[in-house]
Image (tube, rainbow, N blue to C red; front, side, top):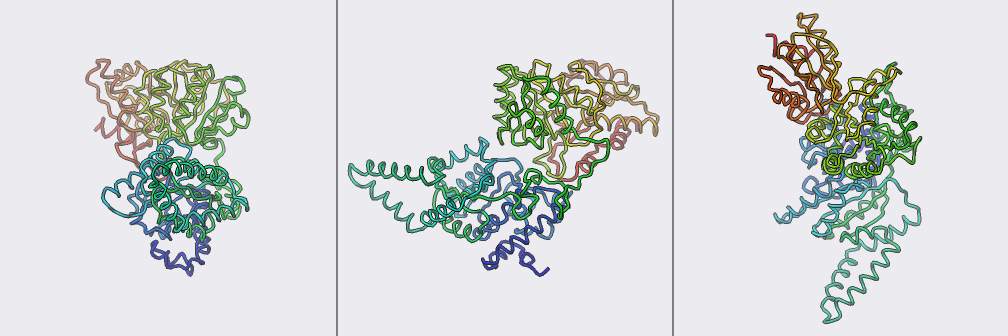
Length: 626
């Protein structure tokens, strides 16, 4: 491979490349990213947008001695390629391959596992404080996007950074705006001035001198400061950060490597908290991604020449997200009080259709899950019916709001929890395996999970009529389409007997009901074991008749769930047995063990966890009939 990229095994090799050759390197990296993501899927648009920025950062910094922290982490592909993982990049997001996010187990260049937004500034500030305590001198840089900056935690970090005055660099990457020629020229001019070492030295020494003027120093300094702030209000877009006590530089063209390197070198040697504002274009260098960055944010495999997604769905198959989307459109037409809320995921949650049809009743609050929940509570208090659609893993961020502002107030907010269970290639930060455990113990909350599309529609319609908060969890999975029949409301807390039996009771929840039913057929055909199969439907309230079903099956039972065993659905059944006083029950729990689950395809991971029909049947034979 006779190209620049073939020479790079680490950032040390990167520094050997002449600066005028770096744009060529950026093109080679883009080609590699597009090629691999077209086969494996992944976060394409965001990664193509930060190629030059990543090259510039590693060119200037002395990583891994200097610390580089990526917020969210879905823009780390170039970082991985430059830090010794280029030859394994083809394994991206594959089982036992490279993670699609920073992963501390992969490399010393990845300081922290990330996948959720808005954590970088706080983590970097903690590193800076610890560095100073230890009298060390490494540079610490946090890279955060404008989307992640919308979350409260980012502002908490900025506020504390301005207070502590630690030596810290924050790179703010925005890609929702463009720089006009005049603004770009002015920005370049201003940054040449304010990054000049002589300018900063004079500025600091002038401040010291004025402070020592008896009686006048403070007043003169205040006047100078007011004049400086007034000018900044007119010509500098970073006044907000300056008021927090953070020096602002930018906006800077994030695709001009030479300019980026020049600014980074100068800002790097300053002191205190600094923010460098760069402007980039999502999908840069690949027109389909530039034209449709939302589609290529988390891309499925695609044809490089055409940009067309290769995901060819089988006939008569849909997804739970699509069922949710279509059901909400129908309910929205019938009920003008129904409103929909999401946190920066209108496309991913299927609410984009609702937004187009009912724009006045749709709210995308940005990456602000905490706000989304309390905002919904306020809407409910005034008589609206808020449906909040958030991925399970991100709903974790709003736990206190669910407790304090929804459950405690007993406000009938409907939580539609997408991507519940094993998600797949995005790995441990995105698997939604904890929602049953972190919601089940909250008073007033009704928790449901459907076995199929028909039941899902019934659950959504049922939730609209319940005068208590409701959570409905559903997986990132294909499902047979709805039957186009009537979808009756479900009796609250009532389980469904799928198959009667007498040898053992299989109590399944949500996505595991069909696997449990198929397991019962295997047991009957291969071993003559007559298993009863219960579709629990509700994790809370739990159907008390489950005790009768267990008695009928000789006090033998197994629970199956696509969630954490600790504190999950199986734990709820154990508690029900204990409170009922039923003795002599042998119950086993199948679910996700007490560990974080790696990345890989959803079905492969479910197989590894023993959550398919054959493995459920084998588990029952091994635990109960040997």
